[in-house]
Length: 247
Image (tube, rainbow, N blue to C red; front, side, top):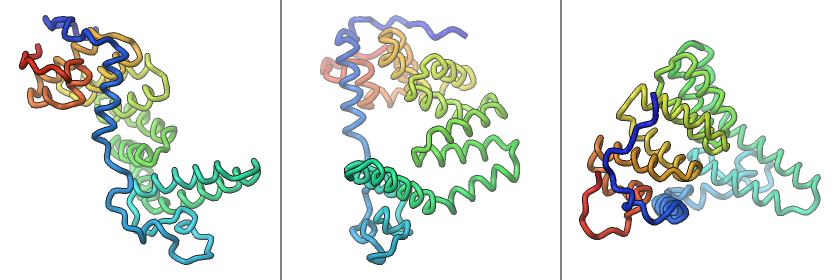
């Protein structure tokens, strides 16, 4: 099915241009982002037993640290490794950080892997494993799981949407757009896929009309999203105070 066409939305509403619109999108996204270490206490970010070369001490976390906290600690530890002097020292420290991170997530990873091994034909098990990997920033592993999920169930919109987003971030724009299209074909009211697709059209295709069409469809499906700051940013009228309706 071809991409949806515009439904009488004035192009002048998008007169700020691609670069300005992209700036608005980035600013809106950053202002709403949660801090990775929100809720973490000081003790959770300190070594448990000084001098012990344990996974907890390497990443300076406790066993109760959340996935988001672990990701943040991993990033900080990697940045510290990069600041060391000498290539050998840097690589040795990176390997130790990777080992510590994998050790701390091993139990959870085993839970999801066991579910897949128990029933490899279960698309939801593949999806949950992929989502686990994506949460931890292991995007290559997540992509494999999402592809397997979509191969088992060609209507699994959540897997295809997440896969498309990973492909988009990796610069595989044509394939990402194909998966967004498949999502909308399977579920014409999938606003998550529509929003991601609209972002792709704006940032990678410089297609303001195509982006506008998708945002218009999102608002028609869920009028409450009309005032969402990311929708307004993509729409290009986040500073519009005229009260003019969209669509």
